[in-house]
Length: 526
Image (cartoon, rainbow, N blue to C red; front, side):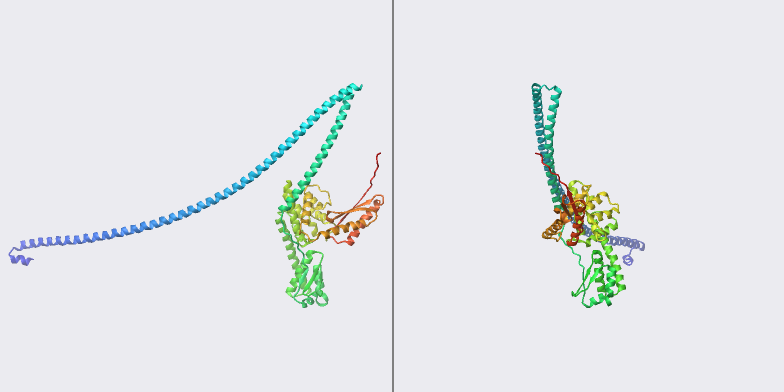
């Protein structure tokens, strides 16, 4: 640039200044061009950021809309579920209210019936009062009339006439009162009979139990006949050791694949059966092994018996029983009476007694306890002499049972006089459980034959006029002639009848022989 200026012929200073100005202008132009380029680039960046922000905002809005829609659906589902729950609760509330309304309607009907009955009774009482008032007026009129007649006819004084009239009135009132009392007694007897039948039928309907007959099996299966020889042992030492350890008889005969275990005690028989099965499975049969296995089995059976007693007490909802009592209760599971399991029978009696006690407004827990324990004497009646009611009562007395329970156990067959309302309830429940269809295997024909045999044995003795088997064959009532039999002979006849029944009949428990000798004096007034 300087060369060009110098060629033109300008001074050097001016040339330098002009060059400076040109450089400044050129620099300004370049700077402006660069600034515009940067501004354009910056605007493009800003536009890109704005576009990116718009896209991001759109994405955020779309995501927010999706979240809002999901939340709306969730809230709607929760609302629907809550609504359904509230509707279900409302339906349940409506059902309960409907049932309560039905109960209220039923109670209202009962109250209306009772009110009508009370109105009828009130009208009857008013009618009787009116009748009595009319009779009183009639009696007063008759008394006045008789008084006037007596005063006119006789020379009787006022006091004498008054005494005579009062005497006649007293006689008439006594007659009417006796008639009324007799009528009320008859009405009461009819009402009591109907009420008792209603209570018993209600108890039978409310208690439902399966008709089962359990039998204690006393046979043991063996795999082959060679096992019989091993059971018997050399010269019979194994079988003797087994019988000594268990207290039962083992019968090994020609019956294939079977050994018979015989014993009167059902617990011993069960111990023997289980021990024999385990010996056969183990295969080691010798006296020491027999004693070891029998001892182990006894412990297990005793524990099982106790557990059965506890289960029965829990099922009958009876608490506070001693373990010894529970063990005897469990032992009843191995005892049957005409095929009916005695433990199941006792539980049935407990529930039946409770139902009847509830109907009469008595203590249901006390009734269940008396019903459950009523036959506990059957668990030890083969060890102690006497009837199972007395044995059971004496046993429970040692464990501080209440007098009500003791009387119910001792008197449920009528052996002792009932001193509380629970004793006859237990007796009725016992009869219901034993006599319901399917409870026992004894047929009606066999039952009637047993009663006829009892009466036939009693009637075969000289001097016996009548004999009646009562209490389902547990007692025989014998009536002898007072002219033919004296007191000493009566005692002998009763003992002879009991001995003959023992020798000629088979029966469970014991049979009571009651002999009656009475003197009847008859005279005629002519």
